[in-house]
Image (cartoon, rainbow, N blue to C red; front, top):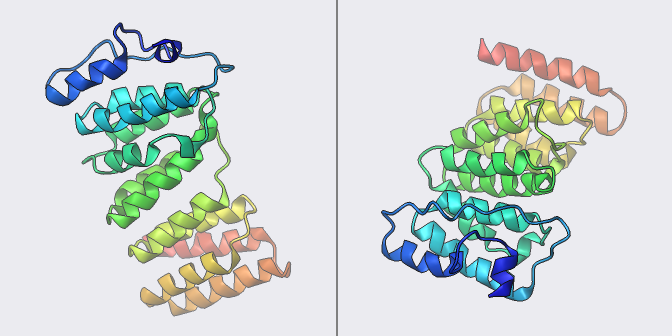
Length: 245
C-alpha cells in the first residue's frame, strides 16, 4: 500500500495490518510502531486519512496510547484539518487515564516540534473540556500550569482561557479561575460578559461579595476604557494573595 508507505510506518507489512494483532494480543508491546517524520510538504490522501482513522481507535482500545500519539503527531506534520482525524476518540481515551503521563507525552511531542505546535491549543481545549466534564478539575489545573510556563510556544488565546475560567468557577476552584483571569488581563485579552459573569457568580458562591463587586466593576471599567489593565492586575493579585493566606 503506497499510501501507507508514504507515512513511513517503519514496518512491513504496514502498521495498519499489525494493529489487528494489537487488539487480539494487547499484552505485547510493539517496538516497531515508532513513526519516522514525514516531510512538511507531504499531504495525506483520503485513503491515508481513512487508514489512520481506522487505526486510531484500534490502538486506543488495545491501550497502545504512545503508538497512537506517534501516529497522530506524524499525521500532523502534513497539516491536515483537525476534523479529518479521529482525534476525539484519542483525546477522550487520554482523559480517562488515571494520571497525566500519557496526555503529557502527546502534548510534549507536539510542543517540541515547530511543525506541530499549531495543534497544541485545540488539543488542550479538548482535553481540559473533558476533564471538567468528568469532574477532574485538578488535571485541568495541571494543564493550565503547563501552558502558563515561559517555554510554552503558543500564545494562550481567549478560547482556552474561557474554558478554564468557566470550568474552575463551576468546580469550586474559583481562585484558580481568578489566576486564569489574571493571565487574560496581563495578555490584554478582553474578558467579555461571559467570563465576567462566571467569575462574579463564582465569587458570590464563595460568599466573596465585596470581591465579586470589585472585580465585576473593574472588568466593566476596562471594557469601557475607564481603567487600565494594570489596576485590574493589582486588584486580582490582592484577592488571590488574601485567598491563599
